[in-house]
Length: 227
Image 1 (tube, rainbow, N blue to C red):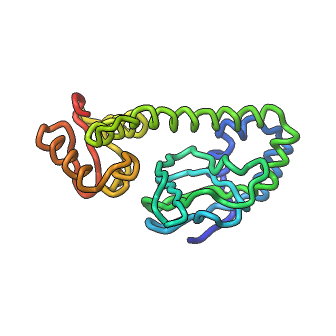
Image 2: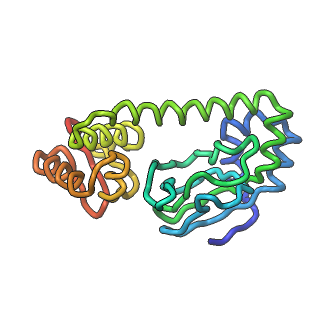
């Protein structure tokens, strides 16, 4: 990982984010003076679960896998972040540590935001706080949607429902198909679905046989009449 001061296009990207549009000129200039740009290579962790929470991040390019673990180091939650995400929201008010690991799926670029300055904006700028709450609500809605889709006792159906949510949330339309723009492993899909790798692999195999899904080198592409 390496970092540098923000360039013009990076400042403009930050300025376009909903929360930053609520800052006045003086507040935004204070923020720009404090931020840094960090590049993270694929497979590297931006931070780990239980690390000190000293910064928030705004994802500019690339995709991030976020994952939490129990006391036995078994995964309990897994999701993905796309460009424009500001994270973590949990802990912004008064948290002291990270509740999950953030790992780069590909080489990515983030804007590093000092948490104490952001907390100051939450206290002093009502519109900024409302924008943060709006972002939090979107995260909660997405999590609830996944939970509602995957409560069934049928493991096969849980995998298919998880794929539906992934498709709706992340897919880009391309040449009559819908493509997920980042890699998803069978192991990670099994974690999301709450089932085994073996069951997940069998479901993917069936969907591929029915020409409803292409899955090659961890990349997913759905047919328009797919999952």
